[in-house]
Image (cartoon, rainbow, N blue to C red; front, side):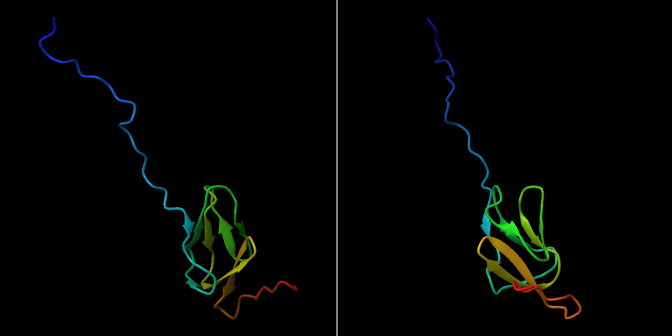
Length: 90
């Protein structure tokens, strides 16, 4: 007969780190070049004008400007007048 209780294993003893997904900058807010606009799983939001999609589907601003949401598309309205301003009409 054992004099010590055996160490059992449990199936619940682990947890994963949070991913911190979601919208980081909303429409009308200022974005610096390289700032993250949306962290997402999959492509719920699409990269529009002056926005780059990273390999983990994160959307990032490529220039300084103002964030604009057009449905599921995210654009940057540039702050620099030398960069042409994109409008939906063309």
